[in-house]
Image (cartoon, rainbow, N blue to C red; front, side, top):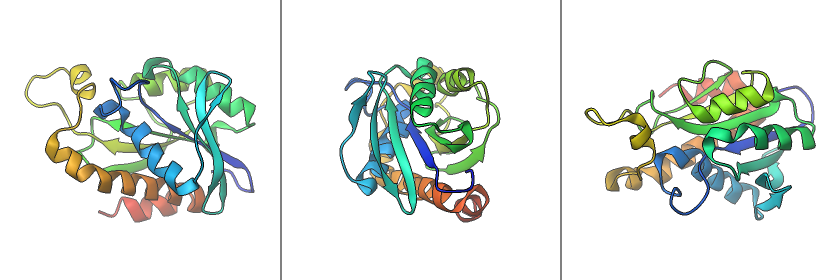
Length: 193
């Protein structure tokens, strides 16, 4: 995060509509709802591109954002909202599902590759940089020979749904620590276990 009293845009990635609401691919958008409860208020339509909620998370002014587009083309809305609020890519945090982390693991990083995640690829292309913050929420690998594209579009299992509230709370805590304390301090806290 840049120094000073700037605004941070926090993006929860997912696909729109009730059909996708409980999919593993939507865990970023689901975690954003946990942050919205902490900020207070309701999401409002923003120029048809996204739903946004402005408020404070701890001591930081934030704009919570859910693109209204499908995940694979979410970069345009993210770039549009960040331009509107005059937020640099370094002050954007993207919450998303990560196949390469065990279910329930939460990890923070700045920049890096997209690991085949089309939502990140779209955001990187639209922002013109990979240097934005990421909150990676582990969903694990698909069982057997299941195609990862099919796996991410399936709902969480019954067992996973029981653990999900704790994972969402941890992802929200990690995001709040990131925006208020910086990347290194947040990593020291949330990567320890």
